[in-house]
Image (cartoon, rainbow, N blue to C red):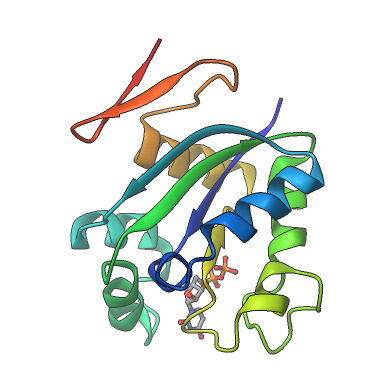
Length: 151
Ligand code: UDP
């Protein structure tokens, strides 16, 4: 079953939106395979958004992502990557349709509260980066001192 990487960004965590975002994914029919509440250092932020490093907003983006804890998750389901992007909504909340997460909860592109992988290849890369590889949805997962332990 396809898996995708989703992250509630620091502004989403600060605003208490982890719950509503998880609810949207559960209501859509996704199964939660793994979850971590963690902070991101500069190196991880730069790797995660590596393909945007030439963009003028890259510095601000890295600062934004490292400004507080994030909630990183692996969600599983049919067409997980595309379905997650569809409930998250367009990158710019101004263009994100009402009913999508960004359309309902965010105002500004620089604070769009949530990330979702944009392709299967990105999902695999990001899951590897944050969780060290795919995690079976039925397997209990514990985070011990920053390392995912799967039983
Ligand atoms: N971003 C920004 N300004 C822009 C475009 C993007 O601050 O003009 C930020 C925004 O947080 C966005 C992230 O960079 O979510 C990654 O951009 P991307 O184009 O990959 O959009 P996404 O995949 O997040 O929808």
